[in-house]
Length: 279
Image 1 (cartoon, one colour):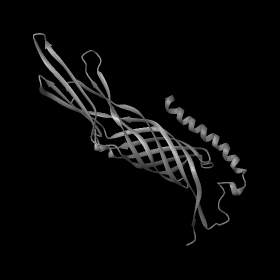
Image 2: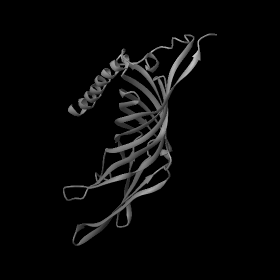
Image 3: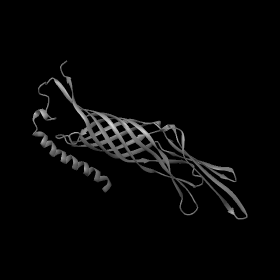
Image 4: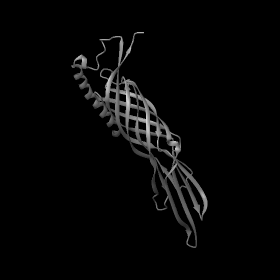
């Protein structure tokens, strides 16, 4: 439970510090304050706009499945991997945002092969997708209605895997003998793993809890749910006895995965957009 509450306590602490900065904002001249309404031209609706950069990182949870188990020789484990990315975005009035950038998107699972010695052979199989995200975000709630230093966003997007092609990422062969000394049978198990074109496009939904540290600097905690075709990563396994194929199975990456992480956002440029309210 500590691992769950500590990041949120950190964010709440940041928002508390921001409140003190908002008090300092109050004593600035009106021409320098961002919270003062446009009283000079009351028929113009003023909205803030900004260009920002972001740096994010966290953990991705991948899930794998099996078709067949080769008589319990084959096993699978889910896998957690570190991811990171950089973003460049446009924010309108701290309500809407669109962004793109680069994301190191890991697609891995763990494959286990029974060894007959009390512990299995274990292999981490997969690759890193070089991904371009295109996202939008919308603010649904201001957690502090006065200072507006903490907000909740929801959003979605598309993930474009630039290197998602049909290619081999792992090959392994196991050979041995079974039976009594007077009559031995040769056995062989082969496993071939592939990255597929199914990883070229995926969709995501996200929630983001954002806190403003200072003007132009924000920290967010986010969770994302990714939807991709099943089988972006696949392993084909075949079991032979005396050169005769006895059984086969496959391991595959499931289509749903999750990302949880931390985002640092920096405003690169900021200005205002005016729109007349007079018809």
